[in-house]
Amino acid sequence: MRRRDFVLGAMGAGLASTGALDPFVRGDLTARAVPARGPIPYGAAVRTDLLDTEFDYKQAIVDHCQLVVGEGGLKWFDLRPSQDQFVFDQPDRLIDFADQNGMQMRGHTLAWYGAMPDWTNSIGSASEAERELVHHITTVVGRYRGRVPSWDVVNEAIAEQPESGATIRGSIWQERLGKRYIELALRTAAAADPSAQLVINDYNIENPTQQCRDRRQALLDLLRDLKDRDVPLHAVGIQGHLPGDMDIDKEGLSRFVETVKGMQLDVLVTELDVIDNKLPAREYDRDQVVAARAHEFLSAISEAARPSAILTWGITDRYTWVPMWFKRDDGKPNRPLPLDAGCRPKALMKVIDEFTRAAE
Ligand code: XIL
Image 1: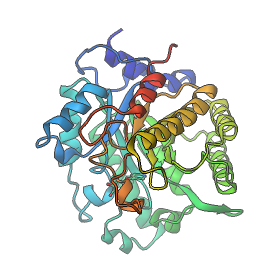
Image 2: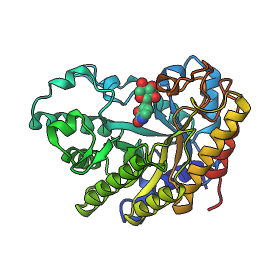
Image 3: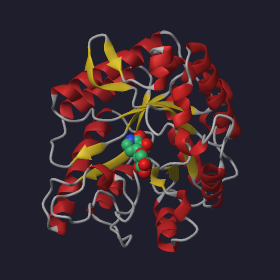
């Protein structure tokens, strides 16, 4: 089987089982055929601006990934500097890079509370919000129709601390349109590219805390409601920004994935990294804990279902968002990703290999 077929097949597996489009009609069929890495495609978030200047970084992505996703570029802040502008330079560059190297590009993200340009604060009414959201999604998804096999349509919709009656996170969309912005985003994305896998993506659901339990429940309630009303939705993205010093709630996470699968939805891991600010200073020890944590997380998911893809949020410790929020007290650089700062594989890459290459 050619590699692109693997990628397309795995990404589309959930759709096939829900009777939607044949997975092979989705995605870019001009991708170059190169040997498959394994049954589950691996990918990473990419800083597109570095592809032309950092050869080892670019090579690491080419060597390891079947999927890429822009770490930025498709976020409103990057794409929409003003109301009448769409700046597609970064995603256009990244999708060309993906094409040239036989990879696929995932799209991240269409409706999120974060990375919003200031002008969106002036969206005053529900009808204006609806017009803007529909225009944005139609334009962006439409531009890459048939070329981006999977979209994080709605990102981080669940409230940080869900309470009864307030389970959806505040955002311009939630404030102007209420919870129906989620359905609107999904329906608009489906109309703009009926072949794409549409994903609801969220985080902080994997630890044995009341907050994670509440967030899992709120997410399941949202999914159930959307499925009951036949809203087009194909998968749940589990981000997987794992706090390195916290256990994984293996049973809770497995049960969550089983319930998701029971709704005929796929799961994928979209943003894996291990936040290591509270882990031991010694690099070897830290890398072992990071790998073990990811192993616990991926085995809890895999026990319940085969993820349609596994992506990390970055590939090398040289470029990671983690120190923006989780700097270490001892000043040592964070090591959350599969390759070290010199792009050499660490223990975490072995774990990813194990899960992506696992037998059918
Ligand atoms: C982060 C990027 O990594 C940063 O470079 C950017 O400035 C802010 O966003 N969850 C998400 C991602 O869904 O979009 C976030 O990415 C990390 C947390």
